[in-house]
Every structure is written in C-alpha cells, then in structure tokens.
Length: 433
Ligand SMILES: Nc1nc2c(ncn2[C@@H]2O[C@H](COP(=O)(O)OP(=O)(O)OP(=O)(O)O)[C@@H](O)[C@H]2O)c(=O)[nH]1
Ligand SMILES: [Mg+2]
Image (cartoon, rainbow, N blue to C red; front, side):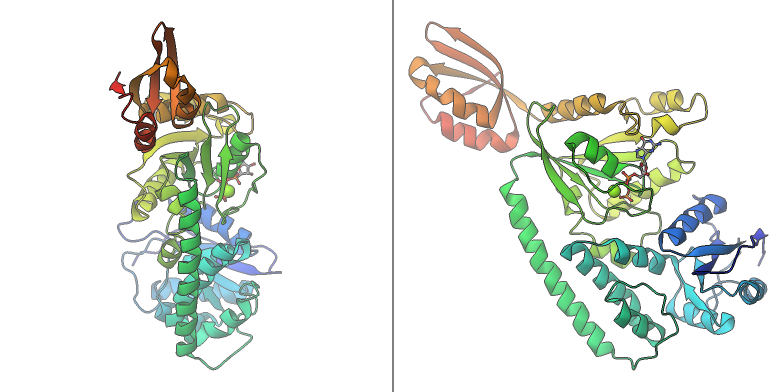
C-alpha cells in the first residue's frame, strides 16, 4: 500500500468538528482528489460540520476490515486524538463492518459519504413526499448497521441529525424497522398514485424539466423563466421538493416547467431509488434542460456524473438541451469560446447577469416546434365556427381566406392529433401540408 498526500489542516476543534478523509480509489479515474475533497468539504459544511483536518490517500488495495491500510489508520487515529472531532467523514461509502471497526479504533463517530448526503437531505426535505423518501432511504441504510445507528435514527425522526451520536443505546429491533420500511413504501406508493393523477390532468402541455448537478443554478433558472421564487441557495441540495409551474409569459404556447433535485457524484443507491418518483418529472418530460455550471473547476466530471445518474434513473431517452449557466463567473480567457465551438447546440447563459434567457426560450420553442407535424385544413364558410376550437389543439401558422372558405396551415402536436381529427370530423378531412 502506498500512502500519499497527507495534509492536516489545523483548525479550532469546536462545534461539530470533523476530519475529512479523501481516497483515490484503486484504478479510479475521474475526480481529482483535491476537487473531490473540496466537494466533501462543501457537503460537510452544508451538514453543519466544521472541517478541522483533511487526510487523503491513494491506496493500492482497499482493506476489507478498515478500508484504509494499517499505517494510514494509525495516522488517522493520531489526528483524531489531536483534534478530538465529533466525526470522521469518509468521501467513499463504507461497509457496515468497516464503519464499526473504524469507530472502535478511533473511539469516534465514522460517517461515510452516503450518510452525509442522507443527513443533508433529511434537513432540507420539506414536503410529505420528500420526507417520506428520505426516511425510507435512511432506514434502508441503517438496517444492516443497526447495532450503532438505531439510537440516532429514533431521534432523527424529528430531523435532528447525528449530533447525538453515541449518546443513546437502545435495544435493537430489526422487525420494527422492517415494518417501518414497509409502511413508508406503502405511503410512497399512495403519494405516487396522487402524482400520476395530477400529471394526467396536465399531460397535454409541453413538459420541460430542469436537471443537473447540485448547485449549478437550476432553481435560479426556474425563477427567471417563471418569475417565481423557488429557493435559491449557495448550498448543496437546496432543492429537494420538485416544483412544477405552468409558464406562458414570453412563450407562444404554455409549457410546464419542473425544477428537480440536484444530482451528485456517488449518490447513495437507496436515495436514488427512493427519489425515483420525484424524478418522474424528469423521466416524463418532453424536454430535459441539462444545466451545467460553466465556471466550475470540475465541470467535465460533473457532466459525466450527471449523464451516468440520468441513465440510472432511466431518463436518458428524453430529448435534451445542454445549458451552460454562470458564464459571468468564468475567469479563464477563451474558455467560453472554446466551449461554444465544442457544444454548438448548447445554450450559454448567466442567471446572475440575466443574459441568454431569451436564447434559451427560443431554443425551447424550436425544440417544441420540431415535434409538430404540418397539416393543411380546408374549412367551408359553414365550418368557420370551428376555428376557435382548432386553435386549442394546434398552432395556426397561416390562414388564407378565399371565396369558398378558409385554408389553414397548422402545426400539430402528435398528442393532439386525435382530438383534432375528431373535431374536424368526417366532413372536412385534413391533408398533410
Ligand atoms: N455567478 C453566478 N452564480 C449563479 C448563477 N446562477 C445561479 N448562481 C448561484 O449558484 C448558487 C446555486 O443556485 P441554485 O439555483 O440554488 O442551484 P440549484 O441547481 O437549484 O441547486 P440545488 O437545488 O442545490 O441542486 C446560488 O448561490 C446562486 O445564486 C449565475 O449565472 N452566475
Ligand atoms: Mg435548486
């Protein structure tokens, strides 16, 4: 095993002090250790920890018992004795056994990346759906780890977090937890049903969903397009509860725009599974706006992670439009131009500067119009009363009035075609334009 790159940053060991552990996995590519640690730092801070030291390692193999090798574990133990943190936070996911063994050695709480993300989610969940989803993911995470987590979970129902680590030792009851999981799954199914009904009633509108890595500016863009006030924060996972709004202003037709939960590298599997229903908004969208932060040093990997997660969630099939936000924050000269050459179809904008929003609207409209089929309809004078009803199902591109009536050039959404045909009935057969 080779141990490299240890850096211990001393800091005041007060509050919820935490030592961060970054590990470059054997054969692992992608995130550089530094950038990954920066992200972990952001996650820890969002969960109200105060990073007092960081330790990194590039092991050749993963120790099945302690994750880290013997030497590194000892070094970490020394750091724990020195800083006396409330938790040691790993940037990887640990097995229940590894967590238990490390806690024994350090005599200190050990948290992995999954749990850290779950903690943040539990603090940020607002709606019944998001809360149920997070509760479910947390119970599934805890089930194999019951020996040391039951106490925390029972207290966290109030959303307190893991502050009371080590405080309570309660008798374990796996059956109780399984029962809770069952109940939550049933509750989620019911919520899901309600949502399906809701979605059916608005199925006719063109549906656009904002997706992308956390903190890239999805909610900011939602606000600009809808003139609404979704929660915007320089925090990871500010949005957990998806909002959907009907937008008509500055569009020739109304669209349904949805903001969704942010994605992140190494998202806990159970959380992805629980949030599948939330992400239905994305899965059922006609168009995905894949938002990226152009100014982020880890842009490339964020894009790769986003694509991977969208695939996992089964949303990669949808029509998508790449959006690069935060053009105002790009400092390096030439980056913007180079990216525009590389992504000629993408929209570049800045929510902060309010630039590029019109171009985005135009791109959405173009995508919408692409799916429409052209149709020519002849209406006699006697049928001209139908015009108003036709406009509900199609865009009238041109109307040519002549002696016998009117010739309409229409653009029709495939989903509206049946209704339009019924309306026009047998008396006036439409012909492809
Ligand atoms: N410089 C700059 N900052 C921006 C821009 N757009 C958004 N931000 C900032 O980026 C941060 C994240 O914005 P949000 O809109 O909350 O991002 P999000 O993608 O919804 O984040 P999550 O809900 O956490 O996934 C906030 O501090 C915004 O003010 C932009 O164009 N330029
Ligand atoms: Mg958001």
